[in-house]
Amino acid sequence: MSKGREAAAGGGAAAVLLRYLREQNRPYSAQDAFGNLQREHGLGKAAVVKALEQLAQQGRVREKVYGKQKIYFADQEQLPAASDAELRGLDGEIAARSGQLQALQQSCRHMEAELKDLNSSMTTPEIAKEIEVLRKDCASYTEKLERIKTATNHVTPEEKEKVCREQQLYRREWRRRKRMATELLDAILEGYPKSKKQFFEEVGIETDEDHGVELPAAT
Image (cartoon, rainbow, N blue to C red):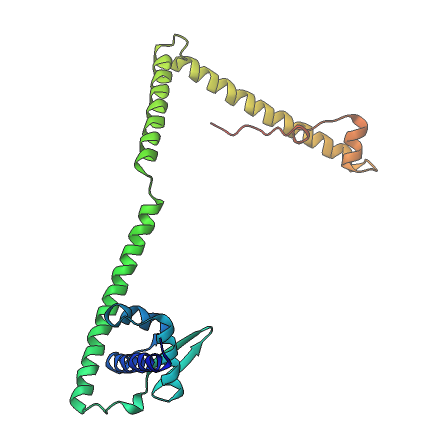
C-alpha cells in the first residue's frame, strides 16, 4: 500500500472512530473500539490504535491511562450543550437505569443465596448413598431389637427392685463408714506433728480419691 493510501485509510479510521466516540459518548479502549467496529467498517486493530492516538494528540478526543491500558472518550467541551429538556430526559433515564440496576442486584443476591444453598446440599448420588447407609443401620437396629425381645434372660421388675434396694443399702453403709473413718483420722491428726499426707503415707492409708472412686449418687 502506498503512503497516500495509508494516509487515506488512517484518516478514514480516525473519522469513523471520532464519530463513533461522539455518538456513544462513553469511554472505550482500543480493543473495545476495534471489536465493535471491525465487522462493519473492516478496520484493523493497528489502524484503530494509531487513529485513536492521533485523535488524542490532536485534542479531538480525550485519553486516560489506567495501568497498562488506555481509555478514549469524546471531548465533552466539543459536544453541543444539552437543553433543559434533554437534561431532564437524561435524569429520567438515569433514574430508570438505577432502578433496573437495583432490581438486577437484588436478583443476583437471591440467585447467589440459592446457589450457595444448592452447593451445600447433597447431590443425588450422595443422597442415594446416605439412604443406603441408613437402611443398613435400620436393619441392624431392628435385628438387635428382635434379639432383645426374644431373649430369655430379662430382669424381672422384682429383681430390679431388689438390686436397687441393695445398692441404696451399700451406698448408705459406704457413706457411714467413710464418715467414721474421716472423723477418726481428723482426731488423730490433731496431735500429729506432720502433715496429713505424710501421716497417710506412713500408715499406708489409701483414699477413694487416690483411686478415682466416687460415691454413687442416690437413685
